[in-house]
Each structure stands twice: as C-alpha cells, then as structure tokens.
Amino acid sequence: MKKQFNKVVGLKGELEALKYLKDNKYKILEQNYKNRLGEIDIIAFKKGVYVFIEVKSRDSLRFGRPSEAVDKSKQRKIRNTASLFLLQNKIHDKPIRFDVIEVIYDRISHIENAF
Image (cartoon, rainbow, N blue to C red; front, side):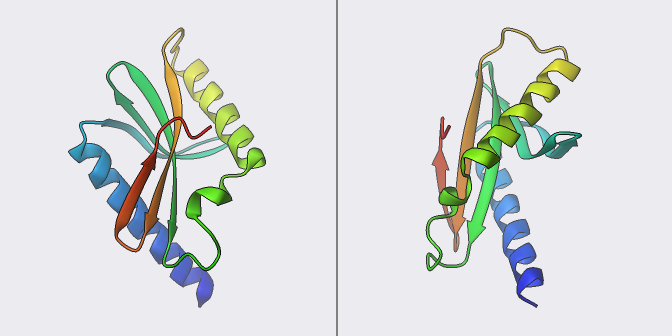
C-alpha cells in the first residue's frame, strides 16, 4: 500500500514539475528518459542550455527534504545517463546543467545547478 502511495505522490510531483517548467518557458525534450545506464525524469532545453532534471516529491518533511535523496551515487548515475544521451544525440560543446525539482505538497522548489 505504501509503495503505491509513493508512486502516486511521485507521478503527481512529475506532472506538477512539467507544468512549472512549461510555464517558465522550458522546452521539454524527454520525460522518463532511459538508457542502459539509468533514467532521467525530465530533459529540457532553455536559452541554449540542456537541463537534466531529477524530480523528488514528498507528502511531508518527516524524512527530510526531497533533494537530500539525490546523493552522490544518484548524481553520478544521472551524469552518466546524460552523457550517453548527449553522445547518442550528437550534442557536443553545448552548455548543460543538472537541476533538482522538489515538490512538497503542492509547493515547488527548483534548485538550478544542484550538482
């Protein structure tokens, strides 16, 4: 039951993050992008920068801030997955950025250059 609840909270958070990004003029390139190295929740583009975004959602702060779940291991996995995305799409010498979007209840916090 708890796992299903977490999945619903996560999906709701991703939908809110997508709306937020679109409202802020980001072009969404990919959602739930997967390759053999991992998954990236959202890949977006704005003002010449490719942005790789991890979305973390919580219904409370009892286990800490959602962004705290993006540890060094998760960051490394996202970086490696992004590198393969860039290679496969022949994107070279373009600025990139790694962001985290936290969704707590219905509040969104966008952490640019999170890692």
